[in-house]
Length: 404
Image 1 (tube, rainbow, N blue to C red):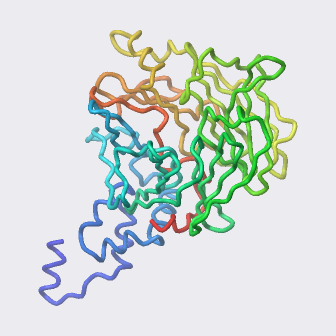
Image 2: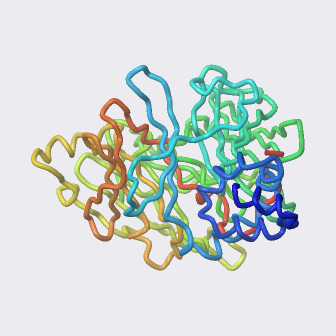
Image 3: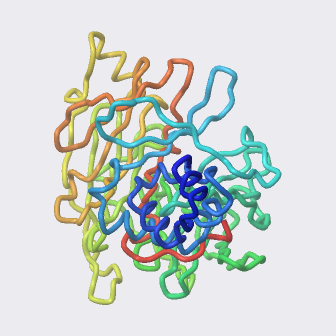
């Protein structure tokens, strides 16, 4: 900034926005937000949706220029208040996470919010006390806006990009047998009735969009036995179908532990993977059967890998670490750039143990400390996200994100 002032005093023309933009595009994505306070012109430039689109395109085309996989941490402190941080999953000098900055709050109390989904550089929040009120946060611009209130609570939400109309959409699966959609730029929710058992609308996983279908894991009875179902709904036609996961592949545990299940898909969308963490092992299953029209036909599940949790023990008292692993201190996330060819190794694990956050994957089975996280903070397992999540194909260009 001082350099620009000196240039101004000697009569040198101010750098044009195009040059400034090209310079900022070389800055790691998560650092761009700090430059918004340089001047009003920089604030306007960085807040421009076109600039945000260029940043995301650069990140997807040149991931080696980034600091690493970015994760958003939702923690709860000793005062029972939520806090949000972000950091890279890599070896870095400063291993303390950075607090998420909100340039605007649109009337919301941050302590009342829960992070529930991410897509590209957009985060979807929900009000804990008014669950039908949602908010969108733009990670690049730090702007935060409220969405039109939905009619229902008890909804599992998802955020995705529709490449056909170049707009983002929020989807909701309601246990009252409703399918909800809000399209960017519109003020009214679209509502469609769903004809199925309400128990199959209680998702154990995040909603996963694959080839115009939202997928999730549910529990229901079949021939008087409790079994897993993969349920999918077409976001265009609202057609819903269910696929049973054979019990001899994975029997449901005695207790449902939300957050210990993960659905992922490769970028090529030819495979769908389910990861289940039980009391003593990690099980990974792969769904095959996609035809040339990207529809699931002749579906078959097969076990892609089973990992004994004893390989993940850590520290002088491994039984304590294992207890942390099986409690709310564990997060299971998908790898950023999985291509579907090495599916058993696309799962990442994050555990809060003592005063550190540890990272591992299902290939190396070695824990690496990545962040310092106070013992007074508790990691909320089901709300850990990469900036680029599988809510939408990574390499498709984003549109203007809900005017933020």
